[in-house]
Amino acid sequence: MADKGKKAGFATRAIHDGQEPEKLTGAVSVPIYATSTYAQDGLGEPRQGYEYARVTNPTRDRLETNLASLEGGVAAKVFASGMASINALYTTLKAGDHVVCSNNVYGGVPRLFNQILTKFGLEFDYVDPSDVKAFKKAIRKNTKWIHIETPTNPLMTLTDIAAVTEMAHKRDVQVVVDNTFMSPYFQKPISLGADMVMHSTTKFLNGHSDGLGGVLVCTTQEQADQLAFIQKSQGAIMSPFESWLILRGVKTLAVRMEKHNENGQAVAEFLADHKKVKKVYYPGLPSHPQHDLAKHQMTGFGSMITFESGSLNNAKKLLKRVQMCTLGESLGGVETLISHPATMTHAALGVEGRKEIGLTDGMVRISVGIENVEDIIRDLDQALSGM
Ligand SMILES: Cc1ncc(COP(=O)(O)O)c(C=O)c1O
Picture 1 (tube, helix red, strand yellow):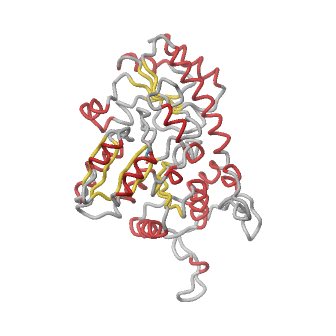
Picture 2 (cartoon, rainbow, N blue to C red; picture 1 turned 180 degrees about the vertical axis):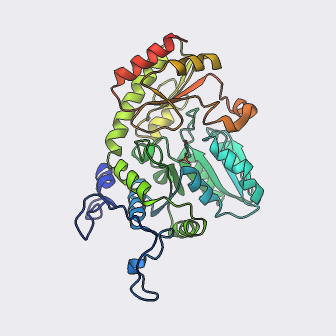
């Protein structure tokens, strides 16, 4: 429907693109095609190209159409998890190729790079995400991709997407942006020059903490063809049920993100004023060193907040005392989740790795949900009082 005349708005496309009523019955919810194979009309005559579910599935196709529309790409390819999608991208490379990555990304990313992909001859360097010159300096003749996550997990550092992509394109290097924290509602990396966008769909796109997934949104048909080949050959595809969960979740993405943003700002301001909190990392606060860049490159600040409790012991006490806020990994669900990056999401970096990027044992990360914000603040207040 969004293709008729003027391009429809974001919320409309989230609900309608790829989500058209099913032709046979008119079902308004995309059916879950729970099938491993498809009857063929004759030898070499598959119906509408469907042969085997590892290669294509109609529910998955619908989700890929939807996510490509929301990010402004030409196509999207979905995988079994965010990590499976990152792995898929880098297995399009060959031994001897080089990737420059931000030094602060989700902890599982350097684990994949350093402990697995280097064994196949890929090379990685890590640089300060806020420093365009550092990315430039790290580029070599064999550099193929720059991998950035903005804002970063968990330090909430921003990378200037337009500046990095402009610099990279002059050197024939492509840029992929992990847009998990912002969702396409608040940040559109392709419109800023990115060559590919990646998400852990497990987070805001799904929004309900009930399924794992990942997506790569492509800007060229060549990228999409390569990734379709990886889906078919490696097989780490998203299941029809998980695809459906995201199709359902994404219908409310616009309203959820507005509420996440409103609650995120209120919680960040509460924490910033609290005497027991040493420092708050949130791009929506004027105290964030890249607040101006955040206002320029994002249309909202989201609901991911990291704060400094002062010590591992303080963090432990606080996390023991929270009641409504749930201690757990992950983010982007409707419920407020609270976690300890040093021992949870970023444990794989090791003590030295965390020290290098300034990730302390006292840091606590919150994914602010869409509950009544006064209840979130009351819970945090009582938890902080016991620190
Ligand atoms: C920013 C970011 N990217 C990627 C991932 C990996 O995604 P998944 O857990 O779906 O494999 C995560 C997981 O927390 C994440 O936070």
